[in-house]
Length: 366
Image (cartoon, rainbow, N blue to C red; front, side):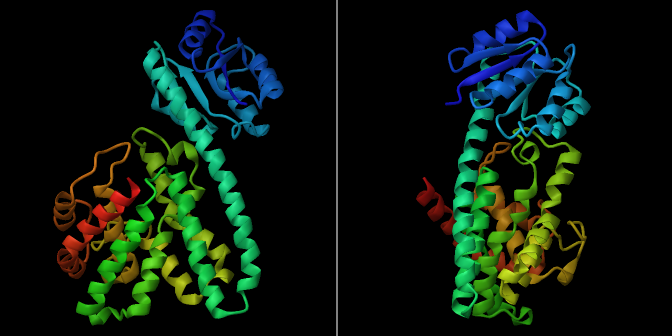
């Protein structure tokens, strides 16, 4: 069973201090340089739960160790926390790109060190369980796919199962609360139904409302291709990191394209539109294509408001949840970007339904 913390630092005092901070939760392994650290990792890789790694060391620097770990596929075995007194954003960015999970800053704060280490280990443990679950579900899905090709009804069932599975993967990787996809699906259905009734020019019918609701689950599928160091970063993102996050719209379309043969045409088209364009804005200031007005597909416009409302009313590691009234006012006042005036009118009519559904699903989750 993994229960060892490997502390790598050429300064005896630093190793002693970190050992005392972590010895209640882990057995301790120590290395005084990068070469010794690599030797211990290769010998004890199945025992190690976390690596605390100094950057400036003789023989092999901390960055050298990270590169060697990547070559030997060790970065997926346990999290790496960099020991550093360097506060440079450039150094931190280089470490994150190289595969580190977090930082332990000098001088050491015992409570902060212990919590950062526990958080890093918990995230990795969660990810390993997730990968096992995804592997099992994916195997089942692939087995079902062969049988579902013969009948249209079975194909539709496969579409829905695939959407639910992949959206679950995104939620678990993104550390969502577990009902984010259900809420966005519900909000999208409410809004799409109102648009069907009040704005016939958009050509929605009951089948399209159902399909938009289901396809909304795929809006963040591209996040499965964003690295953990960026997607699960506990602090504020740098501009470059936010740029990486924004690529989830395009990467999601790549995922859909590779599995296009598995989808019915209407499912694929709506999933693709939602995935690529749910961050576009009415005034052309969104991404990735800076579309404006009704050049933005109506399905993506609907999911954009649904996703925005849920993000505002849900607590995240970087913010508290806004009340439904606060979220409504922020959307109507264009504080989250500019939305279609017709959809804002529809959102006003649906305001109470949104709030009721949010309360209902959070009650179920709790």
